[in-house]
Picture (cartoon, rainbow, N blue to C red):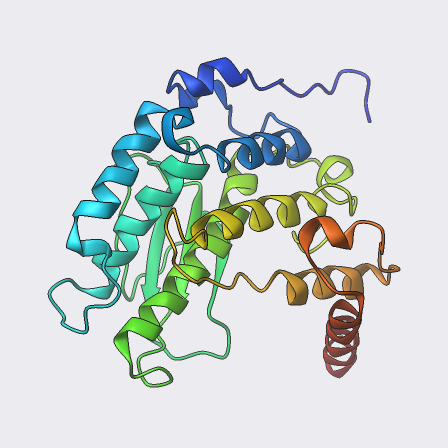
Length: 265
């Protein structure tokens, strides 16, 4: 790392005070960001910040968040926008507001979604989170034909959204220098390294907490880690898997899956 390359430390007390601007675009080590997300995701009850309390109260009172409803009272994209704001406030300090857009693509695809920097989809573009420039676009593909049941379809959309928000957070806030982001212990080559696993595990545990959001989401962390290890042709760090509740056998199967997929390209 060059001697003049410096990361800004994150001041937790400023985040507790509701100041997301204490996190600067592209100026932080990914592991520091992951550490703060993991801490904030564990807040409950009186430990919640004022912003978190307001967001949680709205979630519990507003039927916009009710996935059990099979009616089309609210369009799918409006539901996604609400969950984006909820996740941003609960886990990512409100830092993504105005810097991230959601693009809902009606074209069926094998993949469920992805995150890209500074793109525009001219066929159907919906700006959800403000009027400033967008650093990152989250693309969600339609699954209407594949998953006819709206409740199940929305749950998958929301799982994809949270998965991609984890990527978007790092793309916006973490240092983008190759020597900072590419090590496995940081973001990794495919973006599914240790820090992404730390964040995805923390938020998945929280959204599935029966006494908190109880959403029942699956962020597919095992397949994602297998994809990362296949890309770098690395060994499974067996000592680290327990902290993410991942199984060696499952990760190994996904490594083989992605290795075979990479060979076919």
